[in-house]
Length: 380
Image (tube, rainbow, N blue to C red; front, side, top):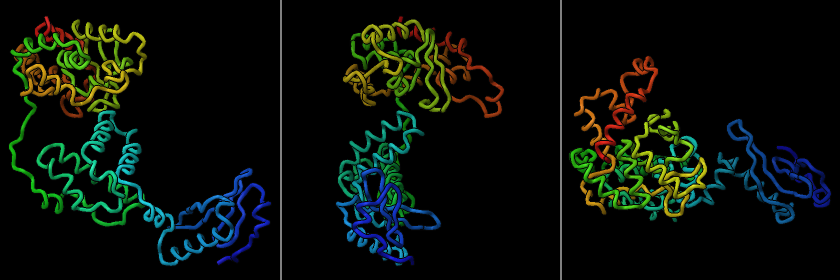
């Protein structure tokens, strides 16, 4: 160990820009008029810097005490930075939002939005707790009202990932994750044996009459639902559509937010174009990055529940928004269209990886004739 207590108060006050060692890892860092203390050590062959506070708020004597505690922790095989984190753990909500921010660049906007919504709506009981105190009983209590639903499974997975993130960030001790499913939550909350339910689809013969009912409502949500039906889109693809994705005769959904992670072109029928023109007339100053169908504040997306609520208001509560894709597919196949072209209308991956490698076209013109005919059937 190097010699301790090399610095004096006078030297600290007069020190120039740079690092000035007091011995065995304690340094005074000077940058201009700012002075601060840092303890530098190695952990698993990696250099780590732990700030100890600024001078003169933290005096030379107090900085030495802090450094002494850190050396004792290292001698016991502990990492001082990790110990500091465990002594001051964040709340679950803070950790969860940090997890979302860290992963958002690799997620679609829809996934990011869903995580934020779940954190606020379904994890409210966990949010104020420090992340190191959350254990199995807290998680079971959170999941129990949701269990047996898709939301319950999604929330459990989110909790598990957030707690894993907290562990690798040094805020939880290493050990089994209390939100793990196999051999743990699966035993405490047995899965209900419900038959698999598919998205309830309105019979295609009923869609034109329903579309006319939608025309009577002149809300952004009703227009967005009309557009979704005409285009055969997933609701997130409509809700998050931005003007930069709109072309003269088609929309081009960007790869980072499309389910297949590839850009998707969807042809515009005349009624769909009319809806876009109406939205442009309502918001003529909208820029390329603005939403085509914004929420109430004019900036945020429509709520992911708004389409279901609109369907409730218009007498279609027994059906789902996603089911309209099935309505379209049933109608299109009934007209004698090829299955692979109908699948491409819906943005499904067609064929094997090898066959897709040889398919150099997205068959936009072929799909356009189907979408135009569907729009004529539904809206004219």
